[in-house]
Length: 124
Length: 357
Image (cartoon, rainbow over all chains, first blue to last red):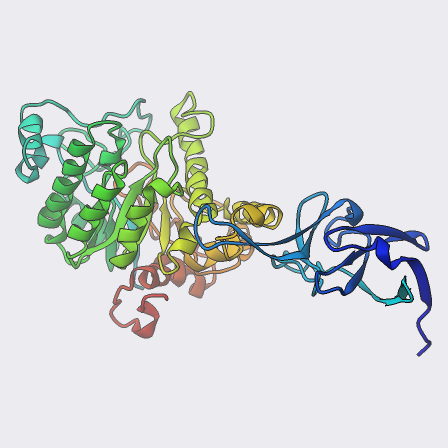
């Protein structure tokens, strides 16, 4: 097994909680964000549903409620919504908030990412 | 094979038949002819004027008022195990005078209990309500649910506020606390998205759209989530459209769940678990097409059989469900799924007839 290649993609301060930071990654685009706990996320820039550019999506929380009209947000900064259809993805796990259609895999693709000396390093 | 018919229309000869059961002041109103009953805003085009032409009432009304006719034509003719009486007199159609409408619903229920449910122990009843006064409807449900043969609440398809609106929630709460099924049936005032059409044929083709609207309304407004044990049956709306509605609702749910997070399951999952559709009026599709639709619905426990007796678009139990379907599927449609829905004890059927949880 060959060692992963490490790529210095941007300054750590460019990646903020609640924001999406696109960075070039070869011929593609990676989208970076930071979870409220401080962890970084680096994900493939295209939505696993129909390929929308996720950098134009939004980071939000998980909307929950038990009865009509009562909506509460939890886990702020941990849910990504696609810029086209609004599908929700859990930025902690990569899984869609709602189960995918039958026979469809619909999970965010995460890359290994770390913060070293003020730089964001993505491994592939 | 046992047979359960989920849609048989009993009626009365005229609204004055309710007089003995009505409370004041409405008893005097109806006795004096202050209101002559509902009249459909269109003409029938079938040879029997909306009925099977071999089923005749003295007054030509489109539902039978004689229990002996139902016994002869349905219960005995097809050796029916259970038949669900669904009425076709829906006081909800009164757009005003809610007190009168609620009183007529109660009177009609008492008439059905006395004249019909006591006539043959294969008959089961639907509690009629005035849905436009949901609190009164809930009280009526509580009152009639004590009758052991009353097994469901009947909600007639309305032409304005669909049943998912919170306004109607007391009705579902009453059905839930009394362990009743909630049935929906079209009406002479049900409309498609652009009205009733210009011909009877067009109006009849639009009825499934009215039913689809109710399915979408009750699932996407959280009725299934608010009452997690409640079960629902759609009558006379067909079934071949359900895959589309499930796919569409699921897609919308993935896109827009953030607005209605109290809906906890995929709409299709709610439908598969607790929605049932009666097959009538059958669409004469092939065995192969029928099996494809069942496969696309994703469960063989969703369809139940109905004749719609005595109406002209009657489905014959021996002809309407394709003979070429697998025997187990035919049995599920013709009786097992309905037995499970209503918790009917079917002689010789064993545990399969236990109520679904």
